[in-house]
Image (cartoon, rainbow, N blue to C red; front, side):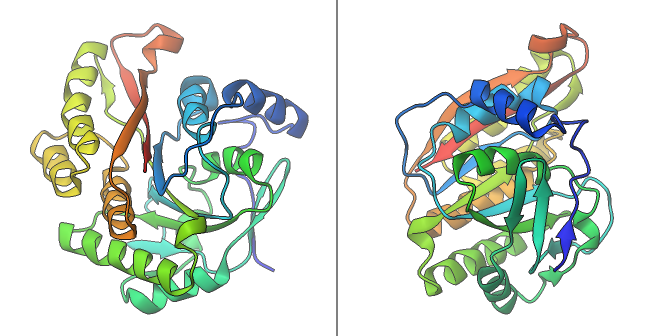
Length: 269
């Protein structure tokens, strides 16, 4: 079996299983569960964005399948890379890939590549896994890592994801997660201002608006493509609205207000 090793354990989050689970307990207090189609979560080190991600995951009704869509920071692999078999390792245990759903998506969307190279060193999906494991240790995943896509390609991929999920009768038991941070290395006030432009389009459930706003305003939102696809796909599956959960910047932790990274948490219902 192909096993994708945890590469940012001990760096983005604790490598000790007991310590990690204790940290997740703090980030994920027990709350009333929301039956969600999807969510938008940050992927920085937990010291910076774990409270935002935990705020989202603690509100999600546990489901059995998580489609994870994140940006490709490393440049390795193909433009749209999906692992279709095996499992991902994190300190508390391993999370299996949902092979049937992964293969069905590849059948639907010809430009999706069965590719492991893009995933080996990429952190944007790995940091989601401990939260998912805490929510449901038996959950399976479909991991997608993306470079830049056109709006039309975003739409085609989202249609393929939604169609594959429905054909396998998994749509009621699946959550799609867009992994993204917001603007990078701007002064805090400027980051909040430019991020608010994209966040307003997200709040309005406007994937095309998100795509165009990010490009027109040169917002350094690394996962805007995953966010656009997630908004499209959840809309196809029947979602009606986006609930903004929390926005924060790294300055709230390190007090460096000159160069911050923004973090958004949202739930799609």
